[in-house]
Length: 338
Ligand SMILES: [Zn+2]
Image (cartoon, rainbow, N blue to C red; front, side, top):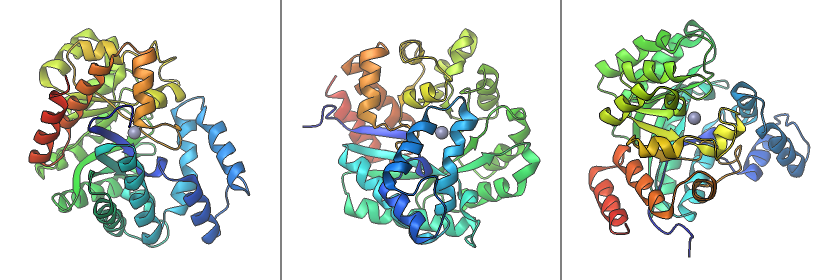
């Protein structure tokens, strides 16, 4: 029996950080793409070494390999399908997988093609693993000043809207934090709001609470990471009052050095303040983690108990974009275990 044998949710899961190493190695060889190592073991070792990054931006360099490989429909379909199979086998009942369509247009695909491929992988994955449901989140990217990829981001906004109700559930902004103020991206979110597209935003991970405040002010309903909100009690109260969820990814936060250790992570205190805290993996392969391992850290080092973990999953379902009836049934099941 699975150690955490209840409906589990991962809301913050990047496709290009959660592949099978064997698959990525094989796909790279087939496509004649240079890898940092010539053997699978060497590739694994390289990944392990880089996972212990000095900061978020060095951590992001690890994504160069999957980004170089995932440039055709076949590879996108396969990694999506396999990820769904992997998390379903770990007892997850719902997950939101995110990816940035604009990262997959280097060899002829359009953003639309990339979304179609990921949706095809989702369709096959759900069909083969009926215990799990999946939502897809499309990420806009921050590479530098907002002008660098403004058009690509705007295209992501409009295409996300086009694919809502076809398996895409929301828009996100990911990438490097702190190069320019987050508010420089405001009109992209304004456009999403105009199109009635739900959106969330990475903030307050490597940067301080100001970015969380900016994301909330721009209308984000969930914050990717966002733990630096803890340094501003007034903002914490506001997030609790408005029900702004935090997608906490403990191992990733420690790896990126945005928190010094699991015991020093404020997730439990944020949870006790009434903020809808959720626990997620971020990048299963880069962080070498699973939801169960994150829950172990929560219980052994961060102050949560077993029932808290059930409550965290209730939070996750509540703030998820899962179909209403499914969400209600899952919450009922979780509540019966409290
Ligand atoms: Zn993320």
